[in-house]
Length: 102
Image (cartoon, rainbow, N blue to C red; front, side):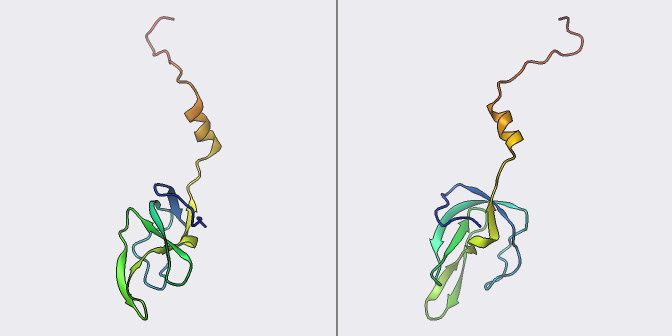
């Protein structure tokens, strides 16, 4: 689960795309999304608003018209394998192409 302190711009992966209280909202399991913001939920928790899926609104008594975000439990942080992050830290290596003399 992602944290309520997750900063905007963080990439997360969807691990639960089933319909929730207000539907699935177009989530796809395994898809990568960008956190626009974390907002307080009407039930006292937090929801995530995604850049790729704009929040929709619904009428919910007694609060009235509310914006709908997604439960934090539906997402995990996108972790890159250590082998890929190690490649980012390496210096480029020039390769000899065929036909060139050494």
